[in-house]
Image 1: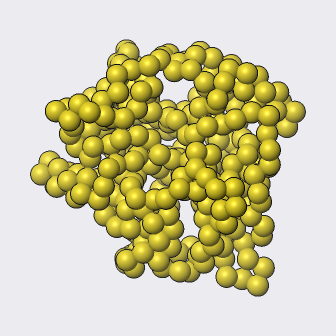
Image 2 (image 1 turned 90 degrees about the vertical axis):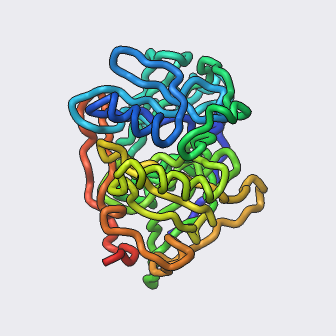
Length: 331
């Protein structure tokens, strides 16, 4: 199936910017994300924590909101100017998709929309500025998380989702995975706006669901350090996969789970993709190097478990994956 070039748009989505998750115990979540991983607490309200990474100048990249069950309220994207919000609203409405403005603490006018797969998206231009902690080396802890990097989602129909983000929102493809059939089918696509490997990854699976939030760290030693920290805290059950190096993206990685099961990827070492003549890189779904360049396989839970989306407080219905192919798993 075809990988499409990004269509020109009259709005400019700059990058992935935040995720808003619901959690069942704010204190336990704070211990995980702040005390262990090392994110910075920007603010706390009665029912939410607002966290950022060390180099970020905007108020938050992760919102944790108290709720009865874990889920994902929204995936946030920054746009280049206030006018882009009106253009996006009109675009979603022309496509017959919901788009409304919502009030969000610590950020300006925010457009809440829903893609054809059912994923809740939020777009904003302005967010409250905060102190950048990049050179506050005395406060570094945990994994030394620098910034949010990407959002990875499981979707039932990767081709349809890819077509929407390429044609309608102007996302470009850096790398992709296909089946090896005579008529190859798109199994996953890594799509970007800011000129790295991805702002949004789409992978085959029952969905839509959020597979993980990708957070950038400085180097591979940060991954080793956080493994030691979790081991010393007797929390090795939260270390799901890695450390390792992806073939796809070339990045080094470690996947960890929070107390509610939400997954974070600690990620470093990918490459730039902003050249307009960059050719997307193809991988076979059966090439074991794509998921881990060194050859070790992912556990089965990595392909099956993910966080549910909600829209207006109700779970987004999950559809079965269109493709049955799945990479080899660890046994």
